[in-house]
Length: 616
Ligand code: AGP
Image (tube, rainbow, N blue to C red; front, side, top):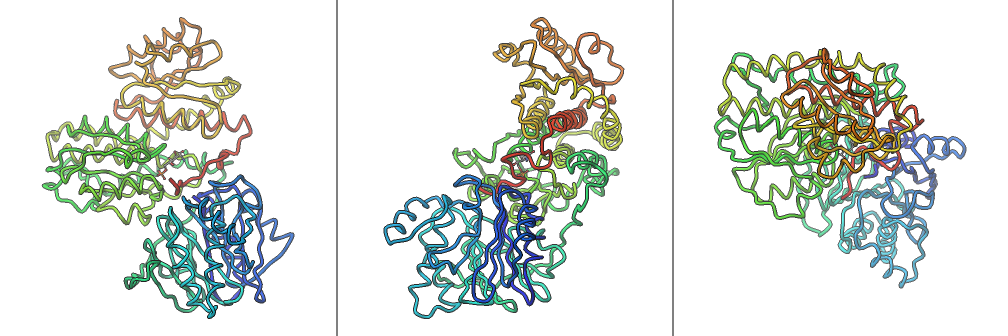
C-alpha cells in the first residue's frame, strides 16, 4: 500500500506533490507527509489523516522547495502517528526517504544499525532504509550524485522484502533518486519537470511519457535527464518510453453525497461500456481482442483458474457458475492471497485469469507471477489496464468501468461479473453452446443495464429497510448457486463500510451450523429470486422464522409468497436467472450504503482500509 509522488523541476514542487498525493489516496490515508530541499536543508511536513490534513498543515506552516518527495501511508509497521508518517530521515538528517512495501528483515537491520550508533525515531520498517543508505553515502568521500546511487546499491542489497522508494539529499541540490523491487513505481517525463509515482494516474496531465521501472531498477533524475542503474550493478535495459492515456479523472461526486453512491448509480453505464463492441451478434458470441488468442488456442484449454482477492474473488466465485454452465469447462477459484502458498498443479492447458480492478494488488500479482513461472497462460481482468497486472499478463480484458474512487468496490464488481458472463458465452460458443442458447444469453445481457437502472429505482425502499435494521449488531446473508457469492459480497460491503459484523453463507448450509446464530436480534438477508431453487429458499426462510429470526428477502417482482413470510421484502425486476446476481448485488450495495450513512461512517474511506492493497 502507500502512495509515493516525487518531483524535480524548475519551480516549487509542493502543488504537484499535494495534488498527486490526493490522486493516490486510494492506496492509503492513515497519514501523509512531504519533504523538500530548500536552501540546502530538508524541510518536512507531516499530518495524521488523509491528504487534506497535510494540506491544512502546509497551510498553517508553509513550505516550498525543489526537489520534493511525498507519501500517503497505510500503516504496516508502527501505529498511525506523526512520527511513523513518511518521509523518514537518515542519521544525518540530510537524506529524506519515502517507501511503499515491507522490509521483512527490518528488525535485524535495525539492530545492526543501533549497534553502530544509529538512533531511530519511528517504529516503521522504512526508517532502516534511510539510515542504511545515508550511512553508506556518508562513508563515501565523493558525496556526489553517483555516490548516492552507489549507496543505494550497497544498502538495498541487504534488504529482504518489497520496496518502492524515493529520496532526496540536502547536499545534492537538484537530484532525486528512486528504486523499486516488488512494489510499483513509474517515472514520468514532463515538459518542465520529472516525476516519480506509485501509479501513472497520479501524473495525469503533467507528463508526456512514462517509464515503468522494473524490479531492481534505480532511477536518478536531475530535472532534465535521467539515468537507470541496477541494484546489483549490472547493465540496465534501455528504458522504454510509453505514452499513457490516463482515463479522465472522476473529479467530483456529480451531485451525490459520496463517491460510493455515485459509483453505484454509474453501473448501468459501466455495464454498457463493458459490452460495447464485444458482442458479435452475427456469430452469437463475445470477443475480446486483448486476449490475443485464437479460437483454436482457447478451445485447447482444459481448465480455467480464476484468482483475485476480496470483492474481486467474490466475482470469480460467481464467474465459476457462469462459465461452467455456459462453456462446460472446469473452473476453479483461488484466493490470490493463498495461491502461491500451495503447490497448485498448473500446465500449458490451464488459463489463469488474474482478476484485479486496480491491477496492483500484491497478492494477485504474486499469483500471476507464480502461474507464469509454472507455464500457465495468464490473462488479466483489470479496470486499470496500464497497471502492473495489466502489463505483465499474456493478454487481458479491460473492465472499462471508469475510475472508482470509493474504497468499497461497487461498479467494478458488476463489471467483473459481466466480463465473466461474456467470457462464458465466448468459451461456450467455441465449444458446445448452441446459437439459439447463446442468443438468449445475449438478449439477457442487452437488457441488463436497464434492469440495473430499474433496481436502482428501489433505493428509497432499501433506505427505509436500512433505517429499520440499522441498530442490528450482526447480519447474516444467504444465497444459493451464483447468488451465494453475492451473499458473501453483500456481507463484505456491510462489514467494510458499517463495521457491523456480517457473514455470507450458502443458504443450504443453514442447517449445518449457521442456524445456531439465528435469534430475534440478527437479521438474515435471503437472496430468493424466482428461479429453480426458489422453493428451497422458502424452506430456509421458514426455518429462520420458526426460530424468530427477522428475514429481509430480496426477491423478484410479482412474487406473492415472500411478503407474507418475511419481515421486509425488496422485490427487484424479473430477470433471467443468470442476471439475478447483478440485481441482488446492487440492492445489497444500497443496503450497506444507507446503513453506513445512518451510522455516520466515512463511506468513501472506511477505517483501516485502502483501495489497493499493494503489500502482501
Ligand atoms: C472491496 O470493496 C475491497 N476494497 C477489497 O476487497 C478489494 O476488492 C480487494 O482488495 C481486491 O482489489 P483489486 O480488485 O483491486 O485487486
